[in-house]
Length: 118
Image (cartoon, rainbow, N blue to C red; front, side, top):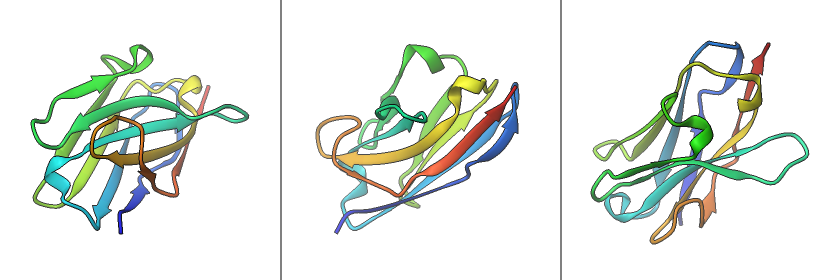
């Protein structure tokens, strides 16, 4: 059974940084697309960043390019999202999702709240 557990969210001032973690279990970690989605209050989740755990290729939404960095540690089945220069519009619940083929699809974790104050 695919399981994903996010952590690392919190309250931070604009311009600050946070590092989110996604602990994965129950599947062959080295062969998946694992992405981070953000759900702002009252809105649908949107893809933020994604990584292929097989070749470590990465993808970013335009809104976070240059500020966020996604990475994976295949020895620990972990995916990280380093978020710098945070803005109030980055506020939301951040979920990680794992799928064999597509970013932002498949099983999701329970999410972690990120709040950026102005």
